[in-house]
Image (cartoon, rainbow, N blue to C red; front, side):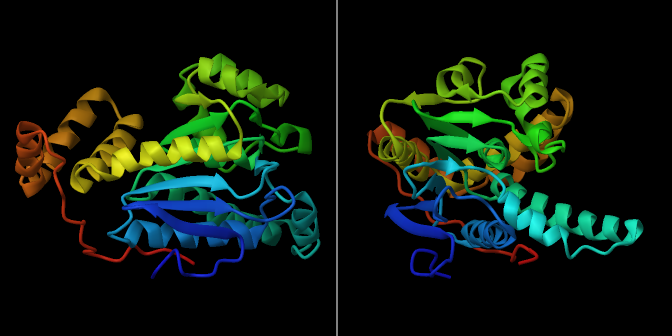
Length: 288
């Protein structure tokens, strides 16, 4: 599938440089997510992961107002009117819905290519879930974050409570922000480790900065890049010893790639090495 030529309802896809896929949310006025939008995001990321030509993804917003206001509450309230009245049956419907929703956002973390979040303006609720599932986060100075779920009567359930504390490495700060739902800005977010960089300017500036990082990543060996992401994801949820042993098993295969010698020759010759795309060996199974 040609992601850039495919017409999506709520996402705009383009290939601004070789190996870099730019995915921009586009649902006016504030990119509020309903079921169709997050289902489409999963579809986009599924195909990005399968595409050998995609070596890095930048996730941004097409709208000047912000990255996303989070969940479309009106749409969610309307959907709840159609739930079964029986508590047991309603629980099963909710279970299936939550699992699908979580899988959609986890598709960012599970994408074979690294995903860079280019954040600006409002980034509330689900916006934190999405940003936390990305590999790298950059934000414009005007970005405002908020783990807003407690203010609508629920615990965040799409990934923030699982990923955010591990990213920032400060359990007390994570609990404070999740329990109070207070807003915090880009500079505070960088201070406690959520962001790599705060970019001067607005939407266009942070998207440009993210694309520059993505271009650097896309020039590297795709075997090395996907392996690095995979091993860091594994290490996050395992002990150091388990991570080292898993890396032994992984790299005894991956070190046999021609990319190692090509990269070394490039270093010695002071020329940019060129690497073949990673072939699609097996289709990823995804519920679309």
